[in-house]
Length: 154
Image (cartoon, rainbow, N blue to C red; front, side, top):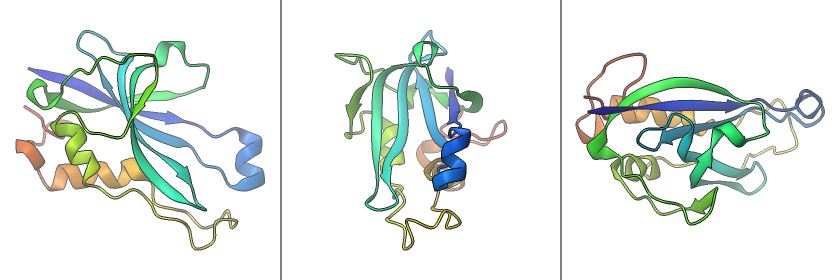
């Protein structure tokens, strides 16, 4: 059996992007079994000054966030590659992978510090756009291409 995972895009505030070049924040949502809005968010956090780090935000619930976001189907993942991890509190932050999908995500280096962190025209690497093709092309953990993007598909 497969589970749908999603790409979440949190647009930057209009005034922030004009002032300091802030761009949208991208993340991957791995919903818990039986939910389309609550689960683990896989994303990188940091700054262009200090670089970024991979983070697993467990117990995240899209339905209660106050931030505007877009949610798009990204891939179907076989259940065997996902383990629902209960969070002890909402939005619990973890850096330790707990299943095959998270382990593969951890193998992909997040963006490093920007050589010009104050220059809004210097675009740093976007982790989900780097991670998704690499997971797909490397066909890690027995993935098969089905749909627009698929990692660990059945």
